[in-house]
Image 1 (cartoon, rainbow, N blue to C red):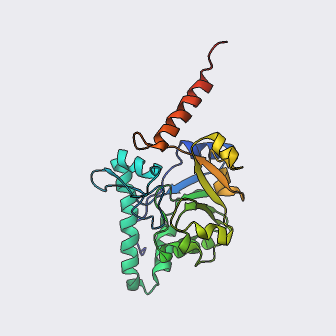
Image 2 (cartoon, rainbow, N blue to C red):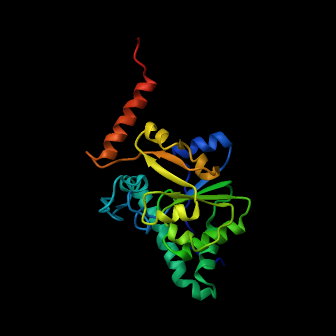
Image 3 (cartoon, helix red, strand yellow):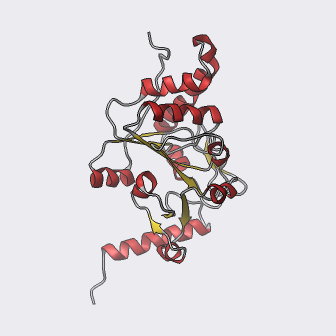
Length: 256
């Protein structure tokens, strides 16, 4: 009998990730936890959707709203899935002693038992982040057990990454705008920066990653355009409106 009767739930690629799948002819799956609730390093993007109602709560230092939290706010089924994952992980950590295993090994067993049968690349945390060292260590073990797979993440839990040794197939993109940004420069980690326009990205000398190619397979720093649902009247909302207007004009050019 398997150690865990409750398995974790994995997802399919969203529209952005489908572009990566089409370009590289890969099978990509995703895994998520509750956004904000599992993000100890979040600051600029800290947002949480209430587990029951879906109501969004932003942090006191939030500059732009988390895309994943907005998705959870709109979708009860998504909230149920990510909370199922978080609850199952916490239960496994609590019950690890029953199987004479440490918590990281027990979690790694759970994740490996739950992994989709077929995939080449795993986006770990479309929503959520590495919420503890033990949980991160579990993914390190999973990556070691599956050396032919690529597991990649954006993360602000950088204080945890400074304490572990990652295999090459557990790919980190440090997400700037968190509580531990100083560690990005100390360790020279690849980083992603959210920008409000293509011009801002150009000024910073950064390419924009539209489909996670840079995140999963690149080695250079890059930019991400503001996206998702932003608080009405905020600078992020105004920037998003300008981007959408520019995109609309580009797809429907006016006659000369």
